[in-house]
Image (cartoon, rainbow, N blue to C red; front, top):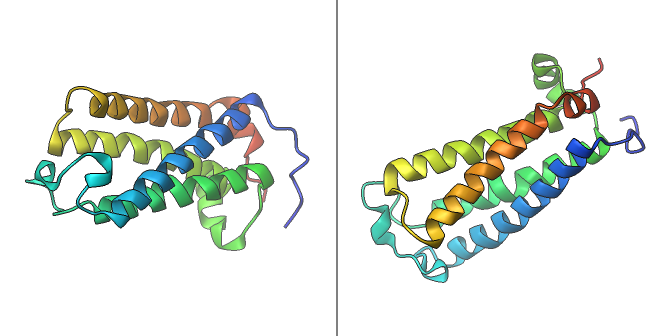
Length: 161
């Protein structure tokens, strides 16, 4: 594994690292609360909003948050900082032409957007703070995705065989 940590990072990549750190904080915090209390009480929610969804409580939601919005962004941050080459990721690297960390970062943006769309389809967009969170995290997904596709971010994370 080559040490590319000294490679200059464009502002777009530094911004992605910061945004993913913020997402990871909220992913771990919110997800762990749902795991500890699947009733949703720690979020001032109850399971009645889950009627008509494939889940009966917030345990799976909590696990999803911890994995997709906690661990995945932390892994992406590490990857963006170091750009390590792991042979087992070469199929993805060659397919996208980018380091796996770029692909993971773009995937994180897509996952955020899809999550909010599916959430709105199943439970709607409640007024007040819940709607604010939906809009905020949907926009965060769009910004992460847009930053990842900037030429400076793509050039930084370009996969070199």
